[in-house]
Length: 215
Length: 263
Image (cartoon, rainbow over the protein chains, first blue to last red):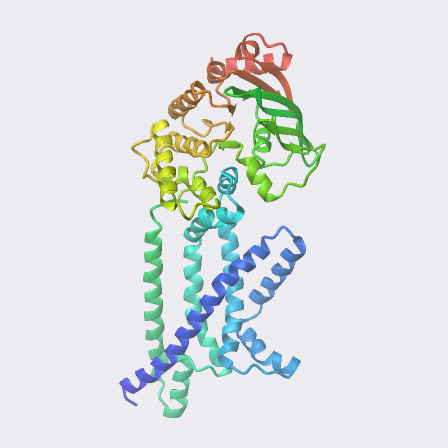
C-alpha cells in the first residue's frame, strides 16, 4: 500500500477518534458538573451515594466499563446495545464525568468563601452567585488539570477498539493483519501528536485570555 | 426614632455561646462603633445582621419591619432572606471584590441583576443600565477612585480595593451599612484613605455599624460606642462616656491595654 492510501485509511479512523473525543466532552463536561454538585450536597445520603459511584467509576478500568456497557444490557434484559459506537460514548461520558466532577469540586471548594458571602450580602441568588461570580474563577483555576484530562481522553479513545469500534488504531491494526505492514501503526502517533498539539495551543490561548484577572 | 432595633440576640456555635444577649438600637443617620477584643462576638453580630449566620434567639427589625423574631418563628425562604439582606450592606475585612470584574463592574453588578428581575426591565433596558452605570461612577467618584473605574481588583492597592468595596455596598442603598474591621487587612499607611471615606459617610449621616480596632477613629467618628466582651454588651454610650469615663471594670482594662499598646 502506498503512503497516501494508508493516510486516507487512517484518516477515516481518525474521524471516529475525533467523534468519540467530541461527543464524550459534550456529554461529560455538564454531567460532571451535576455529579460535583451531588458530591457537595448537604443531603448526606445523596453525597455518599455519589461518592461511592465516583469511587466505582474511577476504580474500575475504563476498558472494563466499555465492555460492561456493551454486554451487560444484553445479559440482564435480553436487549443488547445495538450500536457499539453508542456504548463507547456512554461508557466514556460517564467515566470522564466522574473525573471532571472531582476537578470541578476541587475548583469550587478552592474559591474563598468570602466570594459567596459578598454575593449573598449584595442580595444575589445562589444561581447568580454561581454563574456571575464563581464560575469564571473556577474555570481559570481548573484549566491546567482539565487540559490534562482532555489530552488523556484523546488517547483513551483508542480503547474503543476493544468492542470493534474502528477508530484510528483499529484501522492500523487491520492494515497490519491484512497487508502485513507494521509502519501504519507507528504512523498513527503522528495523528495523535498533531491533535494534542492543537489542543495544547487551544488551552494556552484560553489561559492567556484569562490572564486579565487573578484569583 | 430608631432605624435598627436588636433585642436579646443570641448565637451558639456548638457549645460555644458567641453571642449571649445583645440588645441595642440605632437612630437614623447615627454611626455605631463596636469595639472589643477578638473573640468577643463582634463579627458574629455583624454576620447575624446580614443573615450570613442565623441567630438562635432574638429579634431584629429595621424601620419597624421585623426581619427576624425567634418568638414568632416563620421559616424564612431564600427569597425572604435575600430581601432582608438588602436592608444591610457589609464591607468585609478582606474586601472580597470579584476579581474578574473591573472596579465599576463590581459596583454595578448586583444592582443590574436586581433590576433584571423587575417586570418593566426589558422595555427600558438601555435607560436603566445607563442610570445604573452613572450611579456607579458617581459612587466611585465619591470614594476618590474616578481614575480607577476600569482597573481590575489585582491592579489596585488594598486601600483602593476597600474603597471599591465600600462603593459596592453603597450601590444598593442599604438602610444600615456595616463594616467588619475595614482596615485590619491593610498596611498601616493605607488605613487613612479608607477611614477618610468612612468619615465622609458619617458626615453625610449614613447609618453605620462599624466593628473596628481603630480607637481614635471610633472616638472621633462614632455617635455611639458599644463595647462587647464575651458575647455581651458591657458598655454602651457616647464615645466620651465609653472612652473617657467607662463605668465597667472590663471596659477599663480593655482600654488600658490599648493605650499601653499604642504608647
